[in-house]
Amino acid sequence: MTEAPTTHLETDLSALLRGAPSTVEFKKLRKRLLRQARQAIDDFAMVPGEAGGQPVKWLVCLSGGKDSYTLLGVLLELKWRGLLPVDLLACNLDQAQPGFPEDVLPGFFTENGIDHVIVREDTYSIVTDKIPAHRTYCSLCSRLRRGILYRIARENHCEAVVLGHHREDILETFFMNLFHGGRLASMPPKLVNDDGDLLVLRPLAYAAEADIAKYAAGMAFPIIPCNLCGAQDGLQREEVKRMLQGWEKAAPGRLGVMARALAHTRPSHLLDRSLFDFGNLRPGTPVAKDPAGEAEDPCGAGLAMTANLYAAE
Image 1 (spheres, helix red, strand yellow):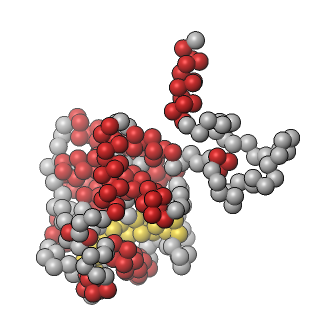
Image 2 (cartoon, helix red, strand yellow; image 1 turned 90 degrees about the vertical axis):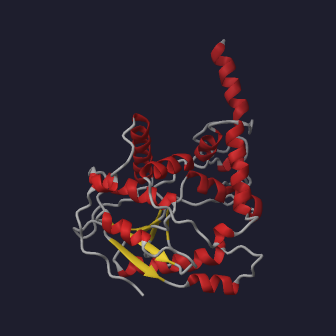
Image 3 (cartoon, one colour; image 1 turned 90 degrees about the horizontal axis):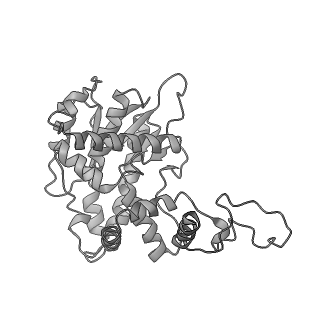
């Protein structure tokens, strides 16, 4: 059953930010998240401009977790500041999980004057019926949820489905594909769905999970825990998350370096023949110059150390 979108209410940012910390530290955090989201939106051309004289509309998906709340808060502030020329429609897909507090998100939207739509679809029963208890639910649950969100976006004339995945989600997906899929791939900040009629956007692609957690805590968002996959033990993604957290703890800043690496691929220094013409690579044959220059040493740390040594002379 689909509830019609609310009538338009002028977004009152002060209402959304009511009770937010006024400390210098929190203001810096807000500014950093706004800057990173705006950078991702610009870098990946998420806003193509007006279509037919009308601004585009985004379906902003809220699960009730810290990431999606932060996504909505950041986008609303960017729009309020005149930095995001799109219409925003918040959406919650109630998947009929036992104990799900049905009143939390509608109350949050109404209290803050946020245009929204609530849709209830019992995907919980489908997932638990089709997937054995000892198997993870994530894949089927994600496919079902994504299909429903696409339908909602079409019904509400939205150009894009906007999700709250952040930097760590992207890195975790990269390593999941590396370890278990045998490929180098992750979550792109922008893609077109298989049917070719909708964009999927991730404006928080540059944002750190720790910053998002601090923002959500400071804003005192009414967090709703996931009782479906969140209740399962031994998920491979959780193992990858712990691995990344361990690396960051041992070498602070490591995750930021790894995230930047995803934007600086060098096909000539990998093994994918579909991306680089190794067959015609011969001495004296002109080839497309690698934008990073020649680097036979595959270790970036070694290159940096060499550069520092020469700089010290």
